[in-house]
Image (tube, rainbow, N blue to C red; front, top):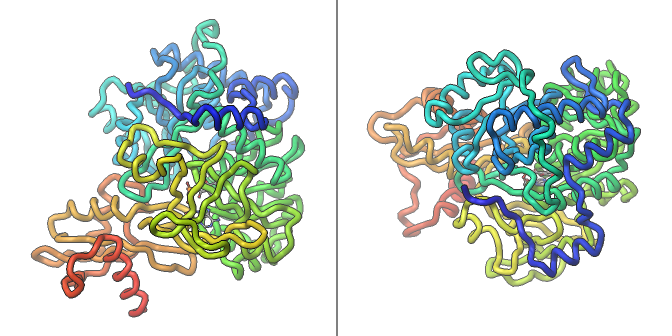
Length: 537
Ligand code: J2J
């Protein structure tokens, strides 16, 4: 098994410890502490259940012992695919407690993605809920097990032939001590700019720092009530400041099964939600729905918006529609997170994507050859710091591409820095589609399309979309009989991939018209096709 590692050079690590960013805290350690300090305080509310800190802790302990009783060993990786249900927390804190390493899949992922995570992480187990949003994950588990008969499968709900989560139990004495704070706590999933999603190893020390500091910036305190509206496994609702920040603060976490106003507004009103995070299209939808005045949303103090660009105009609409402070957040699962601050003047909150969490977040803005651009000019954002990774797991090629020799992460984002050191996102270098905050790799979708017998070549591009921010469009050169776009979409849906990766639009073309310019790169080709499409619109 390839060891899990995330290491900073020793002088950097010493500096981050000396500055008090890394304090030697761990996930099981902080949950135990909260359960001791405020056992009767409510921690998790969702799906008709209300768990106190003592209960969450007890459930995690039991799950931990149960995972070990299944034969899993500390260090083993476990792919977790759970939506916004209380068991998400019993499972992940159970895994942390047993020294096991969650790999966070999204409920939208299907066999193709899950099999990739299992293989890349060399996972020993898979945990899912029986059914969510009409999809039966036991079918997916069966297909996984057909390829990996030794994979342990735990199901929340009716488990059929698999292990029911509720039945997990074991000997508490077998539980290990707390993990090394500098060890890898979990693997997060990258947005995937090229090819398949990469695995992001985050340590206890670095991740806990990121949400502890976020709590301060976003005003999270024990009295806060955080609503998880986006999928809990996403890095944004997990850590900026997220449910993990809220639990760290000893606050309450309320789970919304979907981010729709219909599901979320009654929870905000009923539970007195004070803070939540949304992607821009949803923030606009909420602002519109709030105008109907059907629910009292006055408890809401802070709305974080991020994951994709919030234009100044959209920011104004969100702020006018919702009775709370707007905070922009520009972050990434690899690390660096920027926030506008709660006391920033309007022009900063509306027009920038914030500034880094930490004084030791190093930000470089460079041109094509890696030279720094003049201050205020746009360029590629590179970053290094106490919670930004230095390497992906088990992917040498991606590491060579994504990190400079001196350890800066190439974010792929094009930004400029204002005079007051706030960042404004202006675009990106990578060819992914940011569809309402879900990042889709053009290359990954093209690879699927190329597997179709009537597809000679395919190029996938992003096009602006009024609601989603961006949508995907696939240009197809047919082979033989022309495929019908609707049939091609249906076929893509049958590829066992997340539905958000199926192209929104398919355009059949005779050629990509690249011959006049000689050989062009995929990147250049996608740029030309995008321009062509927008000119036709
Ligand atoms: C423009 N682009 C943005 C923003 C992210 C907090 C918030 C978001 C994420 C996230 C996260 C953007 N304006 N405000 O992990 O902790 C795009 C950039 C970035 C990529 C990262 C968090 N906020 N983006 O979205 O790993 O292109 O994390 O590099 O999913 O989203 O995507 P992801």
